[in-house]
Length: 201
Image (cartoon, rainbow, N blue to C red; front, side, top):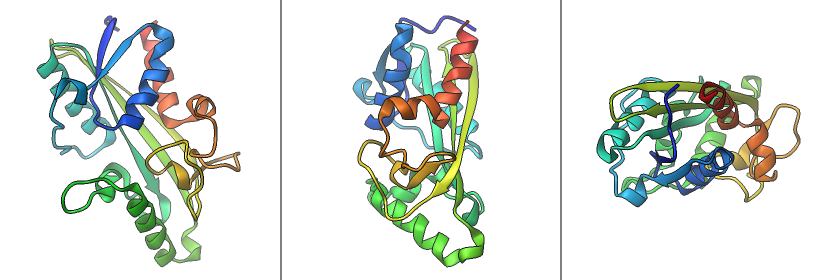
């Protein structure tokens, strides 16, 4: 895999995601700058998979910044909802003006799970696709998943997105209740990062 340091654009406007990626890359001496800090626009996510969307965001950021760019596309897939919200996880949080409110999104997920009936269960998983694009057009992608269940009401204030309603298999606390370092060890993003770091050699 090509060199990606010492500076990397993280193609996200989500401050929680940027913070998590910075923490994961810090031990490798890579300086991360967020897309919002460079005034890069958010491209429309028109892909059909997490990898599709991660790649289009990484390519756009690399092209506009002239730097290697890392993009993460991730989301919550709920079995009772046939895999939704999935790649639409962020969109489920948006209002008509495009403002994101994940409290609203979590309420919608739980409401639709309840409507699906008790036999549908509460199984869910988070998926993370990471893509690194270089200004010359090269790109590499990695994917990680973590399985668990969704719970109600939301618990914890340490995570972001859907973390307050997700409990990973084998745990009794939500992703928003556990220490960030503990989450970094087991999360879907951590698993994708392990594959990325292995590729770094």
